[in-house]
Image (cartoon, rainbow, N blue to C red; front, top):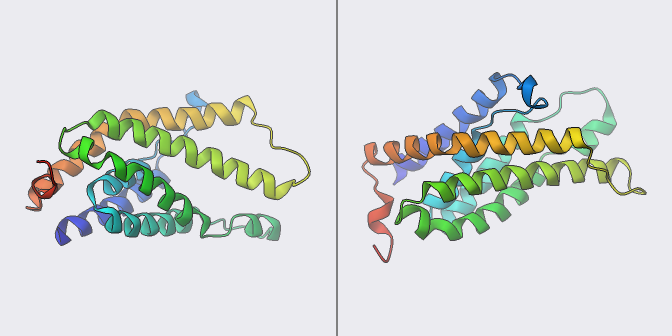
Length: 187
């Protein structure tokens, strides 16, 4: 299980790097193709609750460091402090970990894909609300069509690429000799 844990962390780092290298998709309102959240959801499902929380904290730190603003504007740096993603990823891991039995024993890769799309949708909507509320605390945030379509398209592309991540990491799990499915109760 330790080898598979390190392999999953390496896959998370690779997914973060790939997400940085891929350009925004102009035909989809500038949406991005992100594999990071699909790897996160797989780890949150595969590991037991304590491991999932540890993986969520690591995912939050990596996400914040990868998306750390390098700006001279003190207002932007103040708004985007690292750390809030750890809380978000922890909450999402707690919810997604409940799908553990269905995804692993029943092999429901479709639940993994739906959870990935939902995590991205909630993550970027929460991030948008967080930044908007910090910038203008007196007015409620307006979600424009452009922002909503960008968030929705990113979630859709993540949902469509999640099966690739699921089957790839399932293969890595088999190669590592760490079949998580055999150690689950009710199997």
